[in-house]
Structures are given as C-alpha cells and as structure tokens.
Length: 279
Image (cartoon, rainbow, N blue to C red):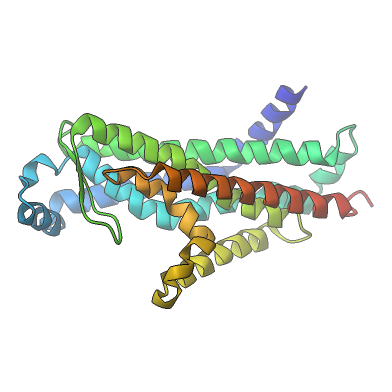
C-alpha cells in the first residue's frame, strides 16, 4: 500500500508541467554557458591562472572542468529556486485546489500523507541534482575534450587540480552530497506549504530565508559566526573538490542538515495536524 501511495504522489508530481521547468532551464543554461566558453575568450582567465601555476592549460580545458564550473554556478542560482518551487507546491497546492480534502476523507493519517509527499519531494530533488550533473557532462563533451584533467577554482579557496578519473570521482561525490543541499531547501519550502498559505508564498518564504542567510554569512564582520548559518552547511558539497577532503567537517554539516530536515518535517507536520481542512 505504501508503494502504491508513493507511486501516486510521484505520478501527480511529475504529471505537472511546472515540475519540468527546472530540467528545462538547467538544459538551456548549460548549453548557453558552454557555447560562451567555446566561442568566446571567456577561458582566458582560466588559462592565465593555470599557466601562472606551471600547468599546461590545454590539459585542463576539458569536459570535467567546464561541467564543474557550470555546476558551481547553477547550484547557487537555479537549484534552490526549483527545489523550493516544488517543495512549496507539495501540500499548499492541493489545499488550494481542494483535492487535499478529498484525500484526507480516506483512511490515511495526516503524518503518513506528509511523509509520502516529503519522500516524493526528496526523489524529485535527487533526480534534479542528477540531471544537473549528467547534462553538464554530456553537453560539455560535445565541445571540449572528454579525457582532460579537472581544474576547479572555488570561492575563497586555492585552485585544485585532479587527473581525469579522480576528478570524475570527485564530481560524482560532490553531486551525491549536493542532494542534501537540494533536499534541505525543498524541506524548508515543504514546511511552509503545510501552513495555511499559497504555494507562491511558501516558495518565496523559503528562498528569502536562504538568501538572507547567504547575505549575512558573506558579511566580513560575521566571519566567526559562519557555522551558525544554514547556507554554510548547504555549500558543504564544495569540499569534495578540495585536494584533502575534510571528512569531519562534511560529516558535521550533513548531520546538521539532517537535523534541519527533521525539524522542518516536525514543525510542518504539527501545523498541518492542527489545521481544519475538512470543514
């Protein structure tokens, strides 16, 4: 029965046209970025940085390098937007359409219903992150060498160099941990969707909190307080591109994000349980 209910939630989620906006925009943005790199002088700063550090630039202008650069850009901009869009729709959209009242007339608990919807949102977040990585590799390989090494320049970090196969492993591992980032943003929007508000309001509230956290974290005077901001832990996947991976820091942040997700579900479930939807 649980499988059938989950399948029904996934059918409803992926049956909506707006669910595919994120996939389409990722595809479009990555193609545009790749074409700019391929047919303009946008790679000059990259070549200059590599050559100043004693590396042959042609060995690093590869599929992995361009794909990783696109992932870093899009994970800051488009990824939070589209997981929040879906998370904000999961409950409040059905309440707005009136279908939630019909669902709750059946013998199913509210917490079970929320659990199924959250799990559907998690699956969507996983698929969206997976598509971000795969689109980047596939389309980068059409215009750049597929057997080149990986060059990554992270904000506030020195450049990191990897050979092709270890670079691909780092790329895949970074996306695996990026799922926790997407899931947390989705969970925040999901929590707000359990309140009595419109889907757009739930999405905007979630994005606003993430943006405010990011802005405050970047203020130099708050540098010693960075670990208190949720965006600090949301960006933990970037540490997979560091030469010596600080696993203790990654484990700490993943544990904190897990705590955030549990809190979002508990708060959202409590509010949803108290709402009068059937009347």
